[in-house]
Image 1 (cartoon, rainbow, N blue to C red):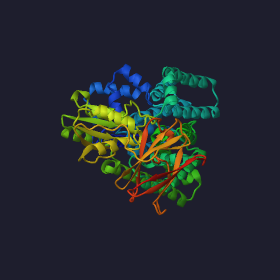
Image 2: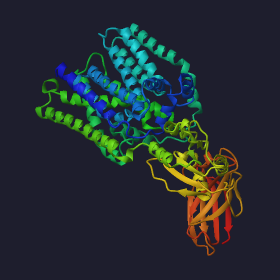
Image 3: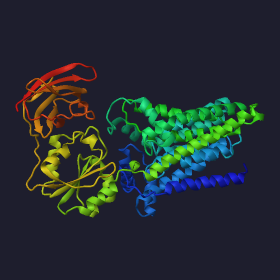
Length: 634
């Protein structure tokens, strides 16, 4: 392939990548994370640094967006444009890496994978740091590969570039350090096998020391976040599910742009293709089809697997995990595809001694591999651009609905309260729309869970003197898992019509004059305790079922489950259940002392005489805690 043709194809791929990332870039609303970007980037440098020190992301991306917004008017497309630019810059870097490791064909194929990847397009249209992160890590990898070339000139310039790329990546995302570790081990592997020059070892050690030294000011903030972060509940990560999520995410962009069921259908084919690519790369290396001192397979395995292992290990005890956390390893997938296909195609009878049929079969396999990639990418991109099932949370549309129909005596209530950045992005305080947060959180805290008493007090405070309220529910299943807010408003206010929106619940209520919200639930029946740990404070009959009201008597409860049997006067069983008392998603390990949590039980014969037998036990050990029986008169 001539250099001129290579440059033309590369330019076409870069333009394709840029076009895909700009296409309908402002069509969708900001979601919460992008609202955080909009808020933080406009705080000013000092406050921005303070805010990010208390958050889970370092400040560099926000600082770059801050500078960008100073030059441009604010809007969805403007805020997302830096990600599109960084995502486009990734393409020539992938080409350069593939070219250095193999040849121009491998570089162009890797660039094509990066240009059309649904995952890369998705994050190239999101106002977050992930496109920047992937580009910086890829730049660092390219510099490492160039440093290992024996004939590399301007070595100190390359070392400086590595220091800047590595430090910038670390100030973009904490997990960049795992990718840099993989690159350092790759450098060490090649250095060990190619002469072990002490001068080069000293140079590389020095540049990594510079990165560490440059990151020292932020290390306390990083360690503090890992120590105190409470934005996810405790537990054990399901490794099998996490690995499956990563594979689906890397290959077809699930679940951002493809349903899990559809993604699973692609996995066997990608598994076979990846195996063929790995074998082709390994065999190609043994034939000598590689450049300089590089060990392409070692780079792909270290870059792809080491960060995966370390990040999953970190998340094992606190299973706050999303496949996007592993995007630092995604370029290894693009290079695997590009290098694998190129090595399949490059087999010749002369170099391998293979038969003509084998050569043609391998080339057909290479063509089918490219077809597989592009077909899967096309489905993912079609979903992203055309299917509302993959839309972001519709904050913009819901806020416009509220703003158009809000009366002067109405307020806004956000549950969860930490969602205020995206609300304030669309309705800044200067618009004069009063909004309240429940609970009042800056960052999601799974330990701040609403109960009846706290919610009633807050509603009485926020809604005093108001005629109505617009309720925005987002991540309410975390902070209000028993739906206390909706229960109170549905009982003591009048629901009004409101449209449905994607991944966001908007509700409208008019308030009754003089109505307050009772700070204790209306209960009947005796109170019963379970081993001094748990109390059923009462039962309330409702239309079509029963309300059971529960309360923790001490902090740090185990995961208690209740085996419940309800019978009528004749002893006939009407209802049986063995479950957590307030629902599967709200274990007693998260209950707060002093708060009451309602649980609804559907029961057709709720108005007759009932006997309710309740057995409490520790779900982890099976140890019996206590058994109680409650009699309800008709």
